[in-house]
Image (cartoon, rainbow, N blue to C red):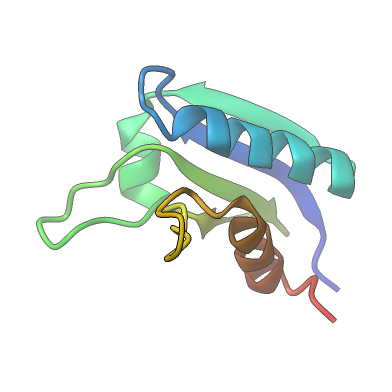
Length: 104
């Protein structure tokens, strides 16, 4: 069984998505009872472990977990509710849990 050791949020406080990613990261860390590390603008880290665009450039924020000493991205973009055109936080939580294999 895989053990989640740590959650890492790489973000920038000036970005509009920051507060949503930070809230999700805190909720996930509390739910899983693991350490949360919030890192400011570490582009080397996100370029190494995160998702990139077609030009090979990473963006912020991105949420990662350390599982069995491996770093894995679990949320790189917030889903948008098609009806309200706002960030869909419930769907984001569901996506994270699916990546981590925590859904039933």
